[in-house]
Image 1 (tube, helix red, strand yellow):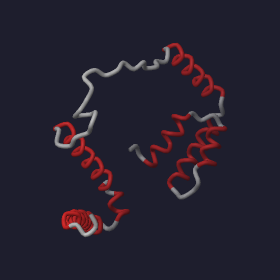
Image 2: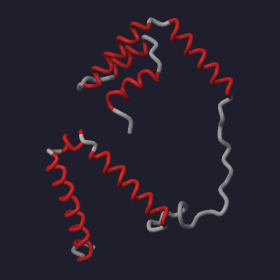
Image 3: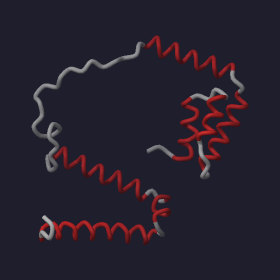
Image 4: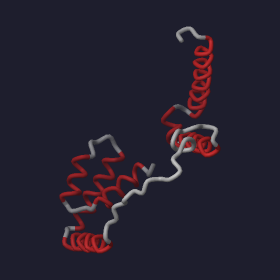
Length: 150
């Protein structure tokens, strides 16, 4: 395959497409500006949408997904958590939130948020929040407020 005209043509095509992206990103002011303007995320979403559309139309073949599929899917035994467990866990979380020092929780969550905006190692800040009995949801919400959700 080395030296193949076809391979060289494909390589040239990929290179040209890459250069178009690089020029677009440079015109935006570089990678950081492109990220800040959500260009990268939008391009990923657009590309994923196009890829999925090609699969659904049958233009792109995925064996076992849109071609050569089994007529019947085997039944899968899905584990379901009993609703009483959810209720019990919710009650435990409510008790923890009542008995913890909420001032400390807020302080450590604010410190975590501030650290997330910088370049600090987040683990010590997460551990402080955990030791103050911040919930996983509260910690995740704090990080989501800084990094967003992808």
